[in-house]
Image: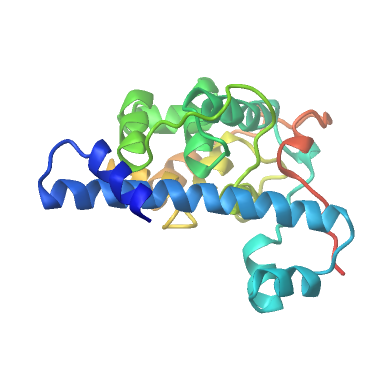
Length: 242
């Protein structure tokens, strides 16, 4: 605890109590993100080794229902994702590496959407006057740059996995038989406590407005899925039931 207190004081812009409290809040977000990624990694490992949700919940010290709700995600099959959407998920890992984070969170998926400049999500963000630099500045105001290694596979946080699952729900609601960048964008709004959703709201973004724009602009002929599986290993573990 004393090390954390010292880190907050060192990172705060000055010795004012409110400045230090603000920095403490950012540090707490960093810790929460890292904790989510850490637990998610080992829960996935337990599932792949055949452990049941009863075993996992016992190890976590929570109910089976709580463990299942937090860590169980039926990630959509990746052949339903368009090439651009799969590229966004791959880019999100690159964004996490670039920022020195040891995990892929919803904020990295949001940054990855800007890389798919021809996708409907990037167009919608641009039409709303939301730029990549503004989003990155807001993200770094909530979670500072890290010092994680700039290579290697990174775990997706439970919230990031949930956002990908939410993208499928958004596609189904719109009557689309594919998952594109636009669905990933809408999926980021579902969890209001996630970094991406918080940042989007801070810059004045609205789920309802984006959904209306995307519904108007959607053209299945522009962004159809492809049968590749290149991105599947990024976030999908064994999610079978025991």
